Length: 247
Image 1 (cartoon, helix red, strand yellow):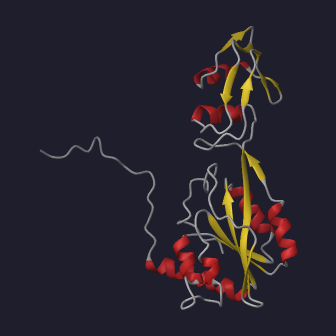
Image 2: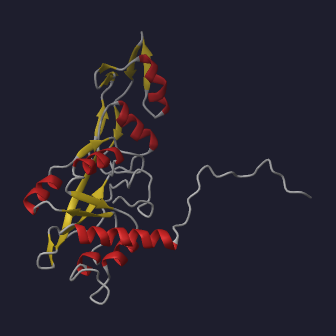
Image 3: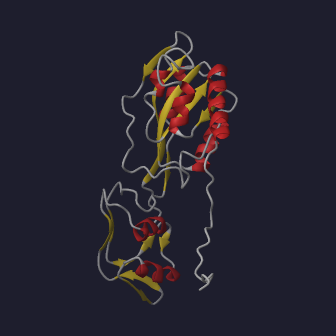
């Protein structure tokens, strides 16, 4: 009997496996950056936001480059040990690569780089699966949004996400106190949607410098002895770190 085509699954996206040529090109890119820039920083990130990152990157194009991608490829490019390291002692930096990590190549002095990263933080709405950073509760009575009383058209949405609401002469009301989330809760789609409705931002996109390698003296300087991922990290907006190289 011929196979039915009615229930055929058609993938909406296709991810091509990275080829040997792609990996070799990525390795070459990293090594060229090592030759061009005197200092290489290793940083970790959490709650990546593409648009904010792109803007930060563009703001420093004249003096610096970011490189993010497959951790394995980055390690090979820098070298895993003294026998294959691309620059003297740079393998010590490669051995710290794990988790959500990137490389920052720059000509800027350290006294400019450190505050640049320390001061960078972008608040945004938390996504499904991330951790709530604080309690958020709403009291019984008329529901207030970020700019005043909520419009009545939102009332069905609130009920869909578990809020005990009703319309009273066009006013959205809670018939009882309601806890949207507690600190450390893993957010459900409904909780994440409600936080957005009430303009509550619980995700902070930031980058933390871990260590750096300088061509002058071929030395490694440890800046933060912590390369572990935070539980609240949401990743790179759906893109795996195996998929991107940003020279």
